[in-house]
Amino acid sequence: MRKAQRRRFWLYTVVTVFAQPLASEALAQSYPNKPVRMVAGTTPGGGADTICRLIAPKLSEYLGQQVIVENRPGASGAIATERVAKSPPDGYTLQMITSSTIIVVALRANLPFDLERDLAPVSLVTSAPLVLVVHPSVPARNVKELIALARSRPGKLDFASTGVGSTAHLAGELFSSMARIKLVHVPYKGAAEAVMATAAGEISINLPSLTSALSLLGTGKFRPLAVTSAKRSSLTPSIPTIDESGVPGYDYAVWYGVLAPAAVPKDIIAHLNAAFLKLNTPEMKASVMKAGQELQTTSPAQFAAFIRSEIAKNAKLVKLIGLKPE
Image (cartoon, rainbow, N blue to C red; front, side, top):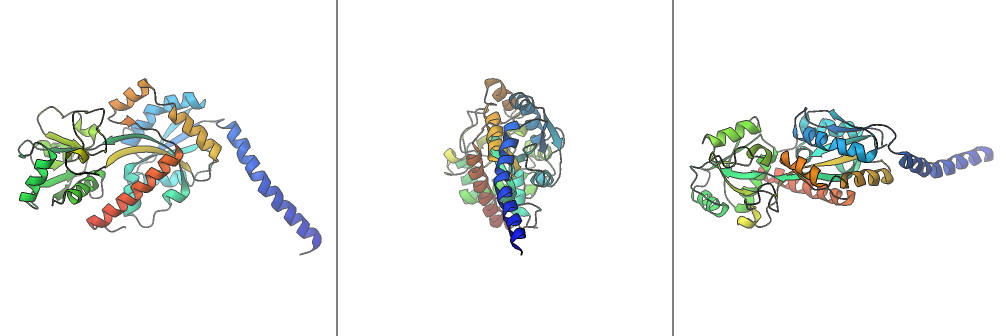
């Protein structure tokens, strides 16, 4: 390479190295100057869509730009995740990720994205437990009695879920493993079918989401024994946790959080996170609670650590169950 060419090459390199941070800083300072798109991996009315539409008006107010909800259903959120992972890293395309997507990561070997490499955590948004319920004919009034009953009838008690590899499936298998009992898994096509089968006495045990179970709690159609989260839910404070009911360390919940493409400047991530932290108002908490969830915003670092722990937990469960990644 001639001397003049080498000089131009190094000049270009130095300019590029210094220009990139300046460009990112300029982008962050002007952000946002157009609508922000939040991608939900469900159809309208689905869990992620519902949470998006509940918080979008307030986020629009805090950001000074409209937050538009875009539905990209399919593959338990994986289609939405790929859409966001491959979007320009400018902070204008976000995803409302769900706990189900973490299970997909454990079940599918050849996903077109790496969740931790290709996406940047912004904040956990909401969390809610599943509810361990039994049909009234089951002679167990609490978790300890249910465990004793299951041990006396190994392989005789069954539990419903919304499908193989679903949140309820893995929550039930985790309960079986930690309680050292053997329950028979019976998958259904959806949450409504599984709940109604339990209420009708076709199934002994179910672990529906709190959202699915709320309308039937107190009707006598099934008996709630415990919630699956580490702490009691403020929606049902009288129902104990599985952890405090005889299975120490048990914790499995449904949650929603927001991700951005990995290369989004840190200043923009911080700006977005600040907007999500502002959601913690009494009015917004009440609105989210009506949807069966509780606001639980975090820092990006806290959400990143949470995602890592969820990936590890679900990968371990998938291996325990014997499900093979596709």
